[in-house]
Image 1 (cartoon, rainbow, N blue to C red):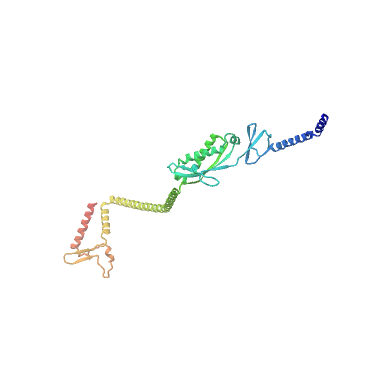
Image 2 (cartoon, rainbow, N blue to C red):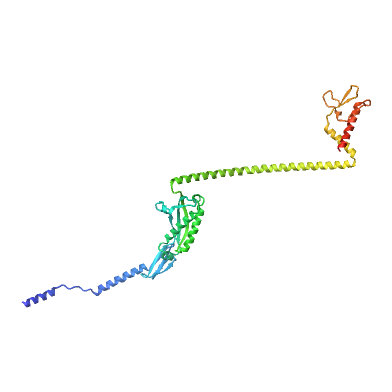
Length: 360
């Protein structure tokens, strides 16, 4: 019985399945596959491409280095790491959402120097100039730029009136904000450069205030139109008035010169007459008297009464109504006409001469 059990055990041990053993060929295959995988990984991770509007930061054991040249570059796989940075001009809005254009009230609503609320939208443009600082100086350099921009915007807007922000002061406001942001970004030194900041829109925060501001703008435009029309009328009238003034001045100057010339002629005539008077005083006085009488009494009629009731009128009137041609000549009485008329005329002449001589 014991022999039988022993035989059965031997038979079981003989027919028990054995575990297969891994051969040398299988180990070699696995090693080749591993080498190929590592080689493929190294081949794909040992190069990188930089485009024209990109820069890269190559990190070796935690030490960053900027790579600015475009083209194909090599690196050590699993040791060096590459981070690419876009160096084109990028931007973000302030006061509204760029995709939906919805208002962001906590960014756009501001207060002016005259204590008015206003909604102003800005767009900020920037460019990455130093990739290493951009990646390792701060976790969110763009947010730093946005915070600085909002602070500068509120500071500048608070120093201007609402009319300036809505109308004529936009260019000046943008220039001041840009200058202030650039100064603060230089202090932060996060590798970002501000390119430009522009006012997209500025309007009152509510519809009622907006309508009021539009009415004010309409009134301002009306005022400017009236001022322009007034200036146009002034420019049209001023040349005419100046021409008239010049004409009046020229006429006055001409009249003045005429008066001066006449006065100088009178003075010359008087001086010449005085020279003659000094030479012959009596003759000159008589001549002046006779000339004065001719001017004062050119058409005087002389009536001669000889005391007999007969009167003669000189000069004699023509029967045809024509003036006697001899009326201008001196009258000489006839030989028998030496009565009172002649004496009266002589006496009157002598008295006039004496009077004239007394006046002189």
